[in-house]
Length: 254
Ligand SMILES: Nc1ncnc2c1ncn2[C@@H]1O[C@H](COP(=O)(O)OP(=O)(O)OP(=O)(O)O)[C@@H](O)[C@H]1O
Image 1 (cartoon, protein in one colour):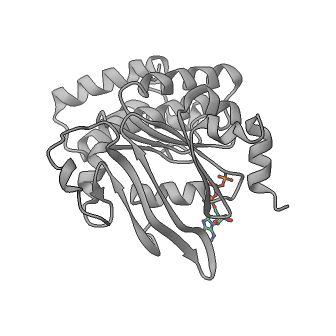
Image 2 (spheres, protein in one colour):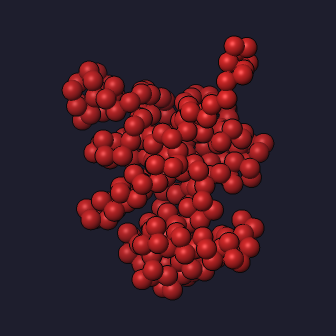
């Protein structure tokens, strides 16, 4: 890594500051590479789509970025913190929606949020305030006291979002936030993400191309564990005039 250029040292600017960084990340299961030498940086204020077909390695890479999985090679940084050596500091700044949402069917949204707020060391006043805020953002008031296992997929996804947002992180990693939702729920979640994107840096995985156009100003694309594109949605579509054709070209061997 090069040091700061001497002529830039006096410039203080947060624009373009990298908030989510993959640095040569690889994950091997035996000889199979679920992620192979993946490097990219999502900068402050960007809403980035993490695109790729089924099995491309999106969830694996997200788990490596969040520190849930240890990389075989390389390292991840969140808000400048190395997730191998400074995971707790990075986690303070990070909200993560895992692939299948929260897995505590017997808890209610309120007890789950209270549990995670306590784990994060929030005091009762702060916790009450934050629960009220995320219940409003994620529209959970009507189910706050019902067991999570009895909620619809859409509500469970919202509980997962509420958990990710509870400590008001400025960085979000969302694994397929609209998977399994009906069209109305998809609209709501996309609207929520667009609003969150006004103040937060977001990386969200998807294989739905409309999602990219609806929400994102950056695209990172992986196929078979390798980075195959990093740029804007316009650049991704450019050669083929549309995202569908480019997705096909990047994922199907010619
Ligand atoms: N624990 C594991 N052991 C062995 N192989 C694994 C393990 N976890 C994931 N894989 C494999 O790694 C590859 C990438 O999986 P991953 O879940 O990261 O893909 P993805 O892009 O998120 O897929 P999808 O869009 O279907 O969720 C797949 O071939 C998967 O079978």
